[in-house]
Structures are given as C-alpha cells and as structure tokens.
Length: 378
Length: 143
Image (cartoon, rainbow over all chains, first blue to last red):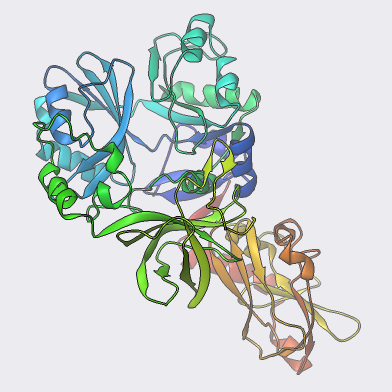
C-alpha cells in the first residue's frame, strides 16, 4: 500500500492520475504530461517532491562525517550554500546522488532520493552516522516550483524581508526563515535548486502548511505538474536519474558526473576515492553520452546503441520523447572514448535500427534547444 | 480503482482495446478506446499500415507510441485497409482528444463479416476493463 504525501488531497482535487512511486502515491499527471512540461519551460510548474528523503545533521562530528561519506566536499561551503554530488561505495559505484546544504557552522542538510532511502540510511549507519546528531525531516513537505516565471511568482507570496532575501539568492543557495510572512507565512526553507533545467526553487515547509502553500502557488499561476513531466524535463536538461543512468556498478566518471567529485584536497580520504583515482589513471572503459533520434520513434531505457557498421557501442540508460526538442532524446552509456557530437549512430527500437546522432547533454538549456549542427530540424 | 472511460453503446470492442464501428458502405472504422488512450497518456507518434494491405484478424497493424510506451494495435477483424487517418502523423494528440472521432486510425473492408459477431459489446468491454484492473493490482488510480 502506497503512502500519500501531505499534498495528496490537493492532487485528488486537481484530478491527478496517481501512481505508486517507490511506495509513495504521487501524481503522474493532471491530464496532459506534455502540457505540464511546456508550462514549466514557458511559465511555472509546481511539483510535489515530498517523497524525497531529507536528513539534517548537526554537531562537531557532522562535517568530518560528510567529508568521509561524500565525493563532494562540504568544507568550502558557506552557510546557505549547496552542492550536488554522489555518495559512493568503496568500488566508486554510485549509491545515491544528492544535494548537500550547509545550514550553519556545524549544521547540514542532505536531500536524497526516495527510491534509495533504505539503502542510503543503512550505508550511512555503517559509515558512522550514529556519531553525529541527525534526524530525518518527515515533518516537512517538499515542493518544487520551476520555470522562467517561478521566482517572481514565489516572491509575490513572501513578506518584505524574506522576499528581499529570496530576490538576492544565487543559484545553489538556500535561505531559512522561521517566519516567511506574506500570504502563507510560517517556517520556510527556500533553495534555488531543481531538476528541470529551468530556474526556480525547491521549498521545504511544515507538512501541515504544505496544502496552503500549494493552493497559494496554484492561485498565483503555477501549473501542477506530475512525475511524467518531471522525467521529460530532467531528461532534456541532461540530468541523471539514480537507478537508471547510474547505480552502484557505475562510477561518477562513467556517468558524466566527474565534475561533482572534489579531488582537492588530495588528503581527503572519502569513500570510493581510491577506486576513482585508479579509474582516472587507467581511463574509463565507458562513458555517458547523449543521443537525438533523427526520425520518428521513441528511444527508451535498454535500447541498444550501434555504430554505423552495426557494432554495439552501448545502451540507452534513459530516454523518451523530448517535448521541447520535438523528438526523442536519450542518455546512454557507451564504450569510451565516446563518439564526437554530431556523429551518426543507430539505436535498435523494437528490433529495427533507427538513425540517431550523438549530442552532448543538456539538450535544452534556459528553455532553448541545443543540438549539434547537422541534426535534422525538430 | 480504475475508470473505464467513455464506452459508446453503438460500437463493438476487441479484447485488446480497439473499437470498431460498422459503416453503411460495408467497411469498418477502427481506433483505440478512451480507456486505452488514458492508460497510454499523451501520444507522440502513430505508425499506420499502407492502404491496400490485407490484414488477418488479430494481426499487429499499427503502433501507437505515447510518452509512456509503444503499443501495438491489432486488427479486430481481418480485411483490406481502405483508408488510414493521415492527420495523425502531424497530430497524434487527436487520439487523446477524441478517441472515437477525429482520433480514428484506419478503415477496413472485412473479409469475413461474421468475425464482427465475435467482438464485445459495450457492457462486455466495461467488464473486461474492470477484470484487468483487478488482475493488474490497479497500479494507478483516477482521483
């Protein structure tokens, strides 16, 4: 039996098609997944992401623990600053990807995937989580407000002080207020982060206040959007999905996430470091790339990627129809070195080869389509 | 919990979620049901057979591809394809908007009109959907 988030009544009232997502009952869409996608690219969409796992860590042991646990380094983060990265196993495989926030000198917040919650917690306990004060924030609900109009829309719902602070908030920064003022009021954690390739916010609010935030944001013009649009938006933005584009058998270097690994200082012995360094010296055997289908059809996870001569290059790890691109786009893991952008390949769909081209993700940035020259017009 | 969607009385249905309408000129029009389009979600591509192709009953004759999955469409009865809905190439969303009207897929001239007798009426089709929902564990819910 799936559990509902604090926003389930709002979803039902809005006519959502609800699906089980790793034990959570969440909206797939509210009528049209494509329309929701376009609203996020063109205006502002609102997602219930309360299924995400939120952990707060506090005390003198928190920073040393996280510097051991994560391939990103929290040490350089100023209070209110966030960083994206991975939690690895000793072989360098990705247990989960996450965002780490420093909230204060000895206070941190991690936002992890719902699908990997049990594994994440078990692994963190094994690595010494108990030596620091920590708690899971099941008392909070999480909303993502994304799109070119998202920030202005939210600012209109804040009191003057919080509003001014929000307007000054840089990407990958967050603010916390005990009293947000404005239309809804009460405690608010506001981060300029997201999973769509658009500007916007992720909000953490008390569970009991979440429906009021939801209704106020919708009344102000945000379009409710479901998991379906969330997936096509992140795919076009070239953002990996844990469990699809990477897992514990794939290193960040093989998943296009080498940039998230903090190699300096060289003395920081994070879990997986030795394996990553060995792989970096030897060269990665396979790497992430992007694909754009030339013609009609939809690339989906598991489809085989071939070169023009029909030799296997690798596999699509996630794919779909890109509503903004107007064609199917995919992320794939192929033998390294990856073919250059624009190179012609073939993808087997329902047993038949379809022409595609290599393209470097993101496929869409800031609402604009970016494809290699030579690709057919969408 | 699952809804059956709209099921017009005057049509006949296959167990694979196609609908069939008998036309006055002896041909039949074929499409996918409201329930089928709801399950698939927004359609993005449709692949239709060539006019003139002769199909066996139950033969895969078209592909409807949505944001969620690609699905085969099966000929509810055997016959020759006399016309396909060309508009769907540019506007696959017609199937979502109007599955029993502008979203029709193809017209067939049945080779054996007796095959039409083997199709389901609306009540039997509604029962089939309910049964499938129970067997499938009803992974989705219409709020």
